[in-house]
Length: 122
Image (tube, rainbow, N blue to C red):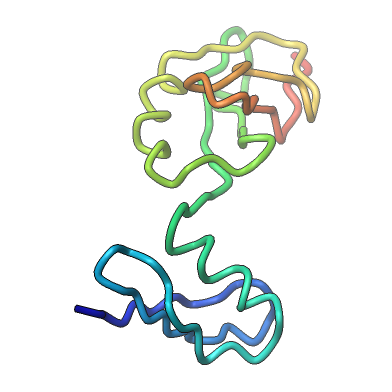
């Protein structure tokens, strides 16, 4: 039994609605609706193994800024976004922190660091 899955492509500004025909064993048998080659590679990846950049904030200590913005250095699996939040909620940073500094190394054993996207100088 086949089914149709829809993915909105973010590979380029067109935002194509790509239809994936998926077979009974989960294999993609047909891709349609993409208007560029980016969609043809993006849609199967998004369907099988979606990833996202994690963005959040962490607490600060001894600063006039109560929170510091952070993000994952690379995309992580979408299913790990929520489990990452308790880890970040338990982090408190102290100055100095510069943009790009590693705040959490190897988040959830993914090999991906969480880095600062703001500065905390005092």
